[in-house]
Length: 452
Image (cartoon, rainbow, N blue to C red):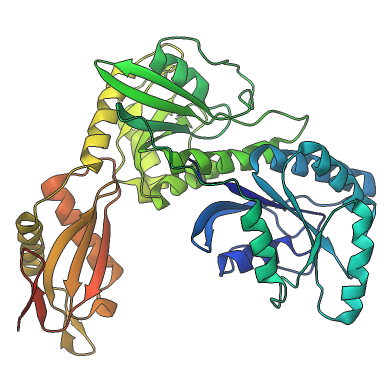
């Protein structure tokens, strides 16, 4: 079951970003006491009481007039309703209930989605008294909180957790070789690629952004293997809300990435790489998924000598964090190189599931340390004792070292490159974790023995 999504909605300056940061326990959103300061919708994977969820701060609109503000709030709230499993409607105890709150509340009530009504900035008895006025919205319960200082926060989170859909123990069908998410900005050709991969027209394809209104799972068999393709095409267009469409494509990608083994990051080769492409690609990397970079609409690119190499070089430069991901040029419309794409999918999935025997892990580690020692930390030598592969999808290695705090990031990258040189792991991020050991080594069976 995909992890659920919680959206925080409300008018400007009620404290949405402050609550967002408190839930995450870190300052991801810019917080400033100015209406409309959240210029970009924020999103993150969060966890509370052992439950993971997507968290969305629906800021990002700037009021010009009252009418414009109400229109923008309806648009933002409508987008949140489409994506969210639970909605937190935030209001301001200091300013009191107003027309904007009532309008948004009406829209939420008609949605049928669980709504937690939250009155923020309740920092004392005076604000506590103001909370009762918010029951005029018709809510059975209103939670008071100070997102900035903390009172009421855990009560609010308990209400949110109770409203989330129950977790399902359902797993993907055993005969599915790979769950493949097709991710990218609206209008880069995701639905066209799905049609090309299935050799059918099972999904609507349209040349305007936002044709697909929800993720679509399609199983397809190709040379005896079953693939579950997850189409994440853009959200339904609602007039001139291109900003909302663009940003919610990221939320949709979050949901699909959580369910997939491999993500096809689609980029419009005719338009080139954008910041939104980088954001969406970053989500797959951070979640440890296999990635293939798919340059679509290659039939529209002028073919000059060396253009492919130069284009791929630019993509690599813009997506340095995905330097392990293979790049393929296709035309979903003409089905150019679709067979090549299936071959790459197979390769990346198999590479992500590769297991390396412990002795061979240590052969690579010992060779790497011998060629390039890790140096000193506070005038003490850093010693790597032993390594094991701790997991797959993504390939994960646990290295035992006497001073993990002294190992620089660049040295971890060096070790990653050495593992890649020997074992590939094409299309997959490699995770390396350090564990502290003091004069203790581990033998190949995992039992502790005394070392130097």
